[in-house]
Image 1 (spheres, rainbow, N blue to C red):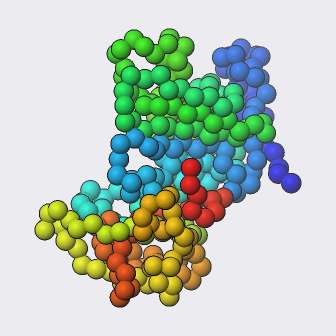
Image 2 (cartoon, rainbow, N blue to C red):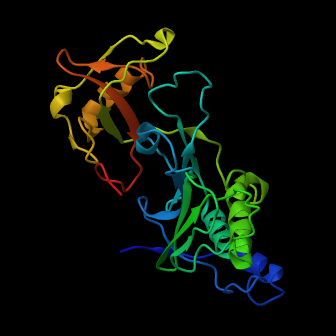
Image 3 (cartoon, rainbow, N blue to C red):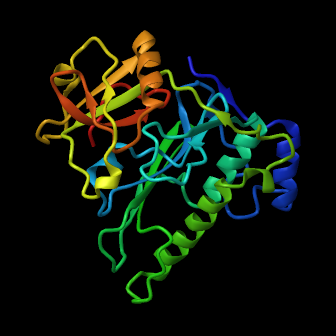
Length: 290
């Protein structure tokens, strides 16, 4: 049974003070939001994907910001500025206190992200990504989809109400990157490297690098299952498969990936492939297709 958590007295007093004694001062409910404390329950997630990018980018897409009910916060870590990039993406973990989670949800409500599903797609620009905010609070999951978030459209075609909503969401997204600036002191721990419990592995047909200087040494496929039969066909794309590596195989794959990058050709003596490696998030299962 999912437990519920609400604000402590200090948060209640703070919110009441901000709202002049009744509510939060911006038309939102005066009752602090509740949320599930389950470790695999997403409280708030911001994810951006799509647009005109190579297939590898969409396969490797990792949410910019994911907060779980137990306070675990996962974000992309610092990325080393070399080309080709490492095969394994950098992911970092932090921990947010219950008080901090409540204040984040209050900010999400003020940004219009907790009122049920919504879509903002009026933008005179093509091939831009879509940002999706997923929030679960007070037993309601809201999914707000925003095309070309942050793009400054000067065409005048975006309705005033949508323009105002977009501005709130841009400000909220920016605030998520610096929680220490507005949450109470001690609400967020320092970031550490995240060690995933499972890894999503996509195998794709290798493509010869156009620049001879980018040719990379092969890396040996570390698993007993041959690459050609690993996982299952994915996305209707020729010779593309996806499977999840965990347990003892996970350590083998992580170790092998340390010597690989995103242009490495993996081989098992019979097959050759590019790999896209993407850490699985808590609660994710298998190779999900949209």
